[in-house]
Length: 324
Image 1 (cartoon, rainbow, N blue to C red):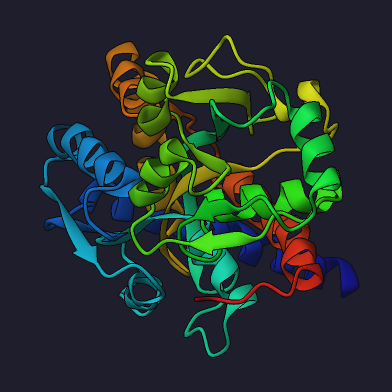
Image 2: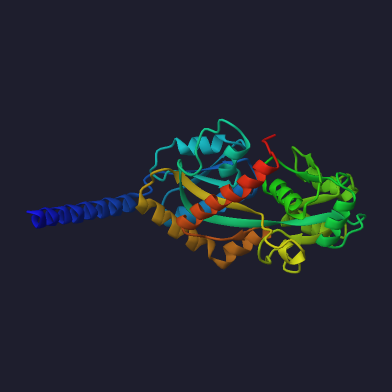
């Protein structure tokens, strides 16, 4: 009797598996059945640029328009997508502010690990540590020495709390054991202007913006914030090579859907996004805009999210960082 029951259970499991496979196959074959919207925080930034390129690449392959929907920076984009139908017709392209928001402010209307389905890591963008030419430092070690000699006297500029340039600077403060206070800018590009004029002394900022000022001699570059050298500034050392072993802080953009998306849809989207990001001409467009394409498995994006929550969670708690 026991053997017969086990056989029945095995048959049932096989039938359920077959039914699931057929259902997933049918779902993938019918997807997308209407235009797909990609919700993006803000307008004109790295996420907006990436979403529009990806939409242009996927539309002819999947046979439906991919429409970028710009929403205010903050938790609204995440809330919209977390509450959307999990059929793959509403996606979210967002930076790490999506999953770090609950660490910086109360009452965030979503759980970053529970309420989204990772699809693929899209891009990564290291910041460049730059200082004005008038500042008497030519290396990361010299900057650390000066900051320790003059605690609280140097200032760094950054955009919103939790942004990559903010966390890059706070991680530097923590790992170098220095006190460089933050000047918050609602318009982060103004920080570049103030750095050139010497009103602030330290800035971690994206390559596409600061490289022209480095080349013109208005700013001095000290290092990049990625763990490995970057094609965006191959002549620069990493922060780890320049004196802070273990340092890494990059801007990342990932593609997500609502929780419980069909596995077949996730697999299809992932395969097409990764294939598109691997095209040489696409890589060149992103590099020209200051970022590097990645393309990952959903599992790798989920692991990055967990790692960020653990690593930056400690930093945010220890430094008592809060949303502006």
